[in-house]
Image (cartoon, rainbow, N blue to C red; front, top):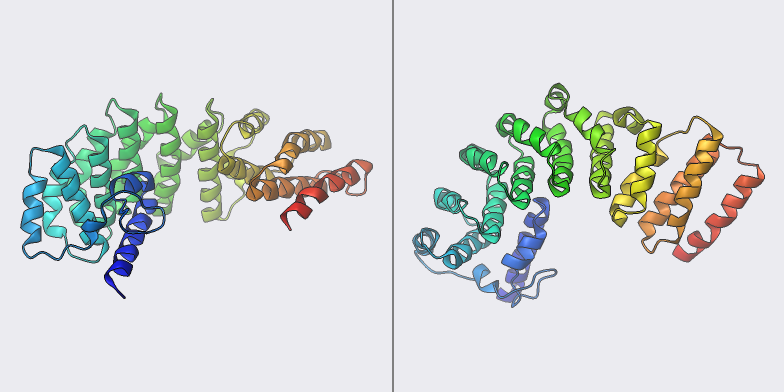
Length: 337
């Protein structure tokens, strides 16, 4: 494998790390490696993956301690690049952590990305960053608040969960929808680590409240989180979500406004809900039917699943109404073939 291939492989691993932390956009901007033709990576930072200097650790430490923000950003990029190719950069942890005390969002994202991945191999050191996370979770900037909550949720260290509870509870009630939607996803991550803690602290109830949120993206994330929790507990999504007619109307309203992947989450949740009356099933099908024309095949398939489920569970499959529904299902299915 030549140097160019090694660089591309390293850059690709860096992007996977960023996606796992939900920070791929920052990584694409900050760690892009445009001179390295890796997928989804842009910028001119490929050089960070190919340095073989002796004494580089001390040089990076000095750059991390520099007053210039640009030097610090480049230094953290070097640290992440070294970590990506398998070099031990744990000696630089305190210096990287000190860089988090900044108002520069790009630098803060890079440091958080480093912490998320460093915590996998050095969980005890990750505890040193707890105070910073808690402080950032109360920052006036909603982007910083959301970043802190998301990062704490991504650091899968059980001892950190007790520090996450209070900031997460505030975030679920935050005035900014971006923070609320991030917190909703974080509840699902916390449930994966400590299901009992999520129930004891009332996070499930707060998550159910978000299903009726005024922001469609928050609704979609809350539904996705509750569905993930239901799958982990092997229980009905309807039971976990606490579905009611009011929540049902909120889901249907959000369906027209949220992103395509939010629509998939909502449609999948609707497919697991069984209407009590045939008229309710008919109304839901009529609201779902326009999704059959969607450009995203995942949305179309989820819509088809809802319609077929309701035809089987709540309606007479042989009725003229269902015959009409089946005719409407044919064109989108043929289009996807």
